[in-house]
Amino acid sequence: MYATLPDLLRLFALPVFGWAAWRDVKTRRVPNRTWYPLAALAVLLLCWEGWLALQATPLERRWFLVRVVVSLGFVAPLVLVFWWFRAFGGADAKAFLVVAALFPTYPLYHVAGWTLPVQGTVLGVFSLTILTNTVLLGALYPATLAVRNLLAGRISSVMFVGRTTPWDEIPTAHGRLLETPEGVSRNGADLDAIRMYLRWRGVTLAELRDRASDLRDPATLPDEPNPPTDGAVRSDGISEDPATDGGSAIQKRPPSPDSGYEDPWGAAAFLDDIDHGAYGTTPAQLRQGLDVLVTEETVWVSPGIPFIVPMFAGLVVAFTFGDLLSGLLGLLGFVI
Image (cartoon, rainbow, N blue to C red; front, side):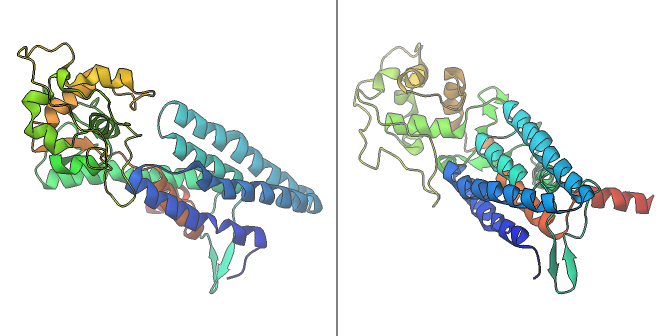
């Protein structure tokens, strides 16, 4: 392989993003420190290539400046806008900000007679190529969900965004419930919030199902709840449960004879007790989610898409093929 040293150094992004994508799938958590080395590398390469541009021709210097301005002045703010409107999460935004700083220009690699990426663009802003690749590849996910649900005969208004999940997989699943006792809903409880509640209360979901009629009574809440954690699933796919890891168990209190509880399941008490939010889950959403999980064998869940996964795929495609959008438009023009 032949390439300039800055472009060779940019290849370090591939294993970092690959690891981040794997961790995002397993835990939906990517530590902030993941991006520190790439951010430092981005600053180094910007300074390095800026100095080289000063030695280049006026036209090359102008194009370098234009690409840096577009990457840092357009792609980076656009990413922040997406994050502001919750199009993706904070870790995704940080990853893309690193992309904007690390890839303002197209890298070139000469491998076995090939020049990669194959497909370039007129402007030549590589971070913009990675962004459009990510969006195009991410759009395949809801289409795949819909086809799988259709083939399985699961026809629903949420078939493009959800999949059915057995109740016993919920403790290690990611996403948001798409069901309430009244039917499907796009505004159900977050599964991380469900895990936080179970850990706080010191019960497993199986125990909650077995003793639903008793544990719906807020009088059965523990006197000393467990730490709720952040609801994360460990990277080995195991849901840590204070009820089995030394946490305090539920208190053996007789259930109240009154079934019309003011706070069924103690949902409001839980949210009032924790010192941070539960991913936007309200007491009503938590109650409805628990009511569904203790009665249904399978539930609709929106697994969401770990955005770093299509970002990693978009990065790999960008390094090899190049700009998917330009390629598709070129193919469309050829066909027409």
